Length: 262
Image (cartoon, rainbow, N blue to C red; front, side):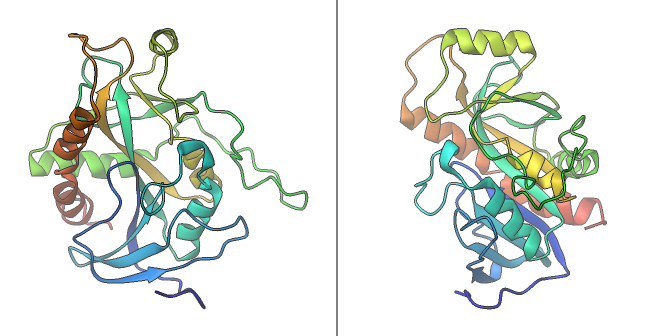
């Protein structure tokens, strides 16, 4: 573990921020663990930097070791800043979500292209301090089209079904939503619901980083199950395991081989 002078790499192909159920990239070789100090406090966990398919990749667990941080207590600024500080320019966020639209059923994977932020009370900018220049970043397209295209191309080449597009509604958590809240989100145009999509995307944009989301559908959102039944945690975990088994193939084939630009 490194906690002194943290190196800055000039060859990080991708940084992955792992969400619920994705706490490590087991395929990383020659991995180093870096404890990174930031102006915004400590990140959720140390960053791990190693090799995947011959490319240097960084990984950070959004909820920390042992999933001890609920969505509203995550230090999003520290997480994004830490990965930027070690040289990452492309961030792939992995988010566990609930499905609202029919195409986003349990165990599906998706790459959303829009989001709506319903969260509150989270520090969502690096412009918080008095001496920091104000930035009015363009969030018309919250996810970087080029990085989304790489992710989709990788899934296609690997023969993995991934839903292209959709709107991710970000709620406060840690509680789940009511039926009425999900009905409102559906009317607003949301296809997915989760708790960690913002302010992460906006912070990445402020630092000029490319950012995309790979959504893993753990369950139907409240009131959306075509066959209503009581959802068990065992069912949620099974759906997450089924969805996440494709991650190594998407990363290896798509982001490193198919595009040739990383």
